Length: 144
Ligand code: DQA
Image 1: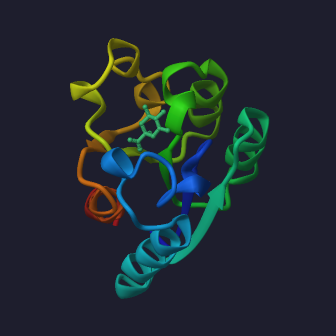
Image 2: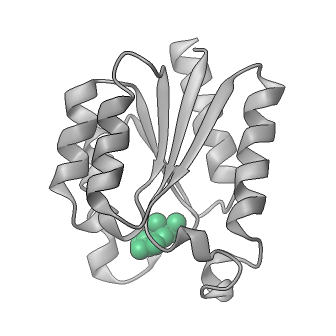
């Protein structure tokens, strides 16, 4: 494993402002620095991508084909709606791990379904930023 792509979906650019009681008080930039630091400590290249647009996320996953060794994805609200993101993850067959800052299993029923999760090897939900570290380390442990 040499290169990891970290994808964050809609409204995660609003971290720190958005519902801090659920998502915490740290910014998206702080999340990028955290994940980049985790990857650096494992000698891994890391690209962080955030978009509020479903098609842009699909395009990014497709562009990763044969270029990226692992994907860490928090599809945010698209988790619960997007068959397109599920299909894109399946299409590229890149090992992927799903992350959620909050524990979606303890929230509203509509957050209990994860389409993207069906194409992911593991899910870390409810660990805040640390879920991204767990996801990176999962990929390293299972895919070298
Ligand atoms: C989230 C959980 C989703 O249900 C929600 O729509 C988000 C963020 C999380 O990180 O906890 O935007 O993916």
